[in-house]
Amino acid sequence: MEWLRELAANGAAAGYLPESFGYGFLVNALVAALFIGPILGALGTLVIAKRLAFFSEAVGHGALTGVAIGILLGEPTDNPMIGLFCFCMIFALLLHYIRNRTNVPYDTLVGVFLAVALAGGAALLMFVARKINIHLLENVLFGSILTVTDADILLLVVATMLIAVFFVPTFNRMLLTCISPDLARVRGWQTAIYDYLFVVMITLITIAAVKIIGAVLVGALLLIPGATARLLTRDMGAFVRLSALLATLACVLGTLLPMEMGLPIPSGAAIILLSATAFLAATGYRIVVKG
Image (cartoon, rainbow, N blue to C red; front, side, top):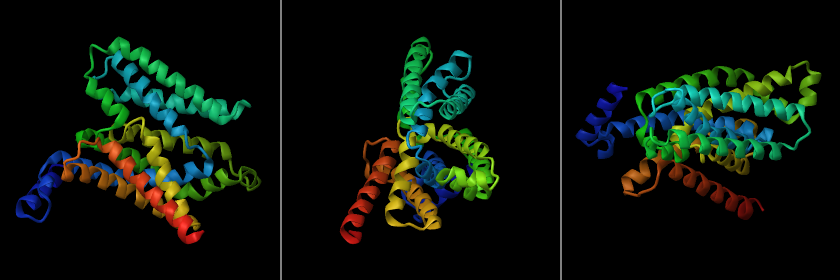
């Protein structure tokens, strides 16, 4: 990453790039945005098809409990990644397991898990309050893409590569499993495997995105670009590509605009606000032009 930061700094010094590119943290933020945008946008199409809009919200809020557990177990207070990863993964798999084996409505089940995650996080954070900086909680809740480190980018790259390896060859099967599980079973596909694979992918990208977008907002970036793309196209291929493009643009512009314009807006909030603006514009277009 150092070579890229030096390249950007030289470009800024020579006048080829805005002066802000001379700051290494902005380069880190843009690299993170370029990785996380396409993955969140593409996975968001399956989230919409599978009607799991609030699943990532529940997992994201579980990050609070995971952070507290990691710190209690002795992890570094500025990056308790093992506790965060283990708790969120167990949390997501348990939620999906119970969903498949009970008659409790899905939205009710997510609401229960969401409440437990928030309450557990709030309770445990009382025990670690003296060990942590309050800004850590702000970053977990609302994200801070401008504080992304090389270690965060490495985690994001690894998560992105793992997701891409499984997402690209299995997309059509996961999509059919989302739309018509019965037809997928008739074809002999193990729908449960694809369901759990999808849950693991969503959890991985949620964990990787928590520091960048924030636990409160990561679910919104999974949902809004896909919802916007669905308003603009009915073709499945175009749906995925447009959703990934919209999410990437929101991440990049949400990182650059507050800094260039001197706006005191957290990057995570700026990213979601830009996504919401695109959604409102697409809604207006759909109503006025398409009728």
